Image (tube, rainbow, N blue to C red):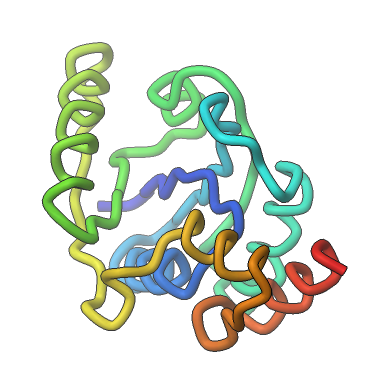
Length: 157
């Protein structure tokens, strides 16, 4: 496998996201992290802010590129020469949704999706939970990279 796409809203990027991206980068020659705008969610960070946060956190990885995109994931992947989509799975509920997406993407273009189980350490973690805890004044230290923690604190001050 040479090129993988790790898509997500990453609002904000969590240690779980970073773990999946780093593990993908360890087994693939090239990884494209695709920051998507999810119309069903009200983002805390703009797409540009999320790209910048991810670029900073992943700056030590030479084989990882971060971009924002809109449109169909499979079209974007094809335009970028990506071989496979990699999705992290936390629980059965993730699998139910991601399996449907994977089957749709395969039906549209033949694009394959690989599921990477989340490290159990981060299995409970989601961007939504991080935002909720942070917004209500709780500490999210240790759940997000330091760069993201600073950005959250600034956003909420």
